[in-house]
Image (tube, rainbow, N blue to C red; front, side, top):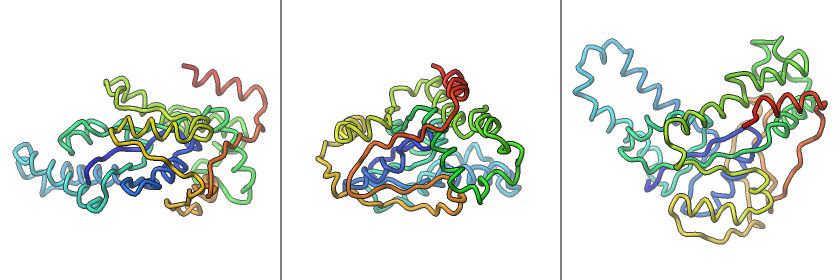
Length: 262
């Protein structure tokens, strides 16, 4: 592994499309939703909480711990050159990543889409699969009982839409703004080559010409896990802008716009 970058951003904002576009470059490896950060944190939790580890002087072992965690990343991606590891929480974990890798070279590619369009897309998928619950619905049925409550759940602090924005703001507040490239869904689907050129420039890789007619699905997630509410499939053979279904009453559009203003 020569470079380790991350993909992050809002749901339904084109991250799956972007990952598959990047994978058209033989030197790039973009993942589906990844458990890498969760695995690293789980190892950290074991070292922090396990009674055998706690009996050791872990301050003296910090170089070993750092090397071990870096070895896991490098070992896992041993046969990849330029990695784009996809997970929405990465922006709030850059200090941990930098410490593990021993550098500040990793970049964040963060996909953005108008939150009104995102909520419209989510609600459309919810209605199209109404015979199945949202994956979180059984644990909190009242949170999904009405359109008003569903939108409130998505937009509340820590919600599906709010939390990735909180992670992004955390990274910016901590001085990492120059390591974040915002990719807008509209630009990705209407000016695809230009966006890809910008990503290449941002991560310090030479530009290449992408033949969009050759686009194929190379990342796979089992959408049944999400009860088919959040599909991770792309249309092969080209890139087309897809307008979100305009199904939200005006009052909810205004609420979403006010919630995420600025």
